[in-house]
Image (cartoon, rainbow, N blue to C red; front, side, top):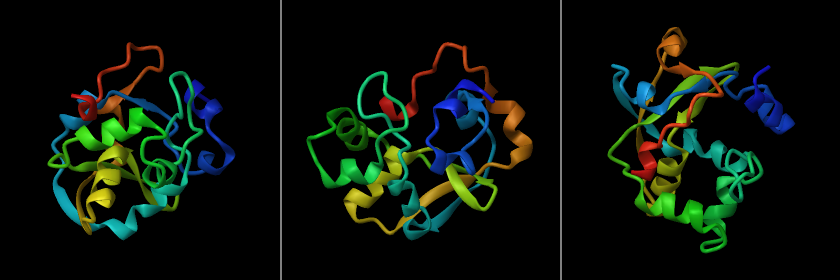
Length: 145
């Protein structure tokens, strides 16, 4: 079990990705884009996928940020500045499609009242092309650019 999996809350261990990834390599994949109804993805708002402060991991649900503007400025800023022209990357895990990259973009869609979102369904066979080592220097997320 990698370090990230050890930090996960129990409610996420069944479906969260058991590997680390490099965002730039993920974005570079040639995967078609499709449109999904945002209602299919809202369940992500109710799992503690974010950190509430620097150095914290998996202790903040996106719904807390959306319902409490100003309380988590680091996430408010990411939601405000993220570029929703980029699709959300997803993969099927166990029993559902889960977001690999793009929860802030999903939150922005919700905040704007949009009902459809562009997604890319990344096949599991492509994991070796974007998987990374936990100890690699973290890349800058596209949402932060």
